[in-house]
Image (cartoon, rainbow, N blue to C red):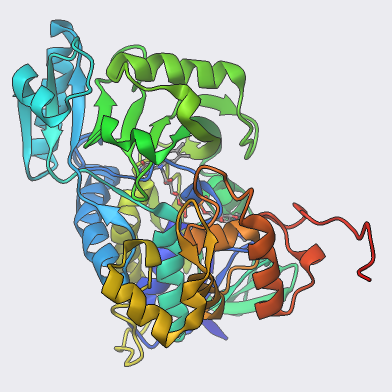
Length: 477
Ligand SMILES: Cc1cc2nc3c(=O)[nH]c(=O)nc-3n(C[C@H](O)[C@H](O)[C@H](O)COP(=O)(O)OP(=O)(O)OC[C@H]3O[C@@H](n4cnc5c(N)ncnc54)[C@H](O)[C@@H]3O)c2cc1C
């Protein structure tokens, strides 16, 4: 019997599994896809929000501000790419001054440190490429950027090393309560547990309905993006938001944790987890972004992508034990700032599980820190040492991002080995550059196949079924 089953391996599920790994708890995370961090957690803006946006006295406000602090702490400890760049919310007309003041006041109420309203001169010194029509801004010292998918996988890997368990390709299809414990029915058999935590993102309402009466409904809201070549990254030093007004929240322009520039997202209601890009959505993103940074040259875009928000009919996040089914917990309706909030949500759910009777004795195997070798960021001496220790570090596989064979093989040997081309990309950044894997893709396929003993034809681009090699065209001589 497990103590806790966590349904969903996004940042919320992975943060919870990691937080639980501090204790001697039998916890298993089940994820329907072939990797963690594959839902909204891989397709978002990657912003560490400061916390001035949520309404005061909401869970969103509380978790955002605490999550912001924890995010920098955890990323430092687990070696996840993350940078405290600061953020600005820019006003373009005197009419927007009251909106900026409102955000400032909300931030103060939410106890966000390092907030100030800055005027045009200071704003231009901070962001020289900002449009001349930018007049003033709310500056937040604690805003920043993070690699969201690495935040998920780093915590999952550390949790597994510490004794936690992750079951991939495992879809929850039913939940029932039997003699004081839960039976979680999956495509790979049943799992019995004392507690169940629903962290299923855009499907959290579907999971909730398996065991409790209908309380909430998730609405799917897609956001589309441009990811720009790293040569454009100097166009934004901080996260540049537009002042929210009656027309919406605006479009952001920001550096990414990997040194690109990200532009987006729009917001459109879609049916289900529909991540298609549309010409109209992207045109809107382009037009709005140029208002902030007119120099963006969209021919330097290297990729478009979109993510789907788990918007809901609730005004706030839903985090806590079900009123109807004791022992069943929801982490639901986790739209933005859910990434930033996730580590704080996890700590709070651990506290609630403790109050509900989960014994929380310290786990001596808890992994508090880890280091990942990234050849691109090593100096000459470090590179020489890495190659001397492992000659695979002398072979560059991804030329755009300077990723070596050694890094890919190391990732494949860690707990939770990536089993698709994109999962390797999410661990090592291979294929993230200008050619988007055009050159390194076939070589990465061969390395995965060699190291994990999977035939090349069985390795998907990303999710199951997205196969790259469909058959043999010519037998080797
Ligand atoms: C466009 C966009 C921009 C955003 N920008 C930001 C931002 O800049 N900063 C910020 O803080 N937040 C941002 N967010 C919000 C943030 O991305 C989400 O709140 C966060 O990723 C949610 O994490 P999660 O773990 O709840 O859900 P997910 O990451 O979606 O994970 C849920 C997981 O559950 C799995 N699952 C579902 N059903 C089942 C089942 N039956 N059995 C097993 N597994 C199942 C899914 O496969 C998925 O992997 C943004 C979101 C979007 C979409």
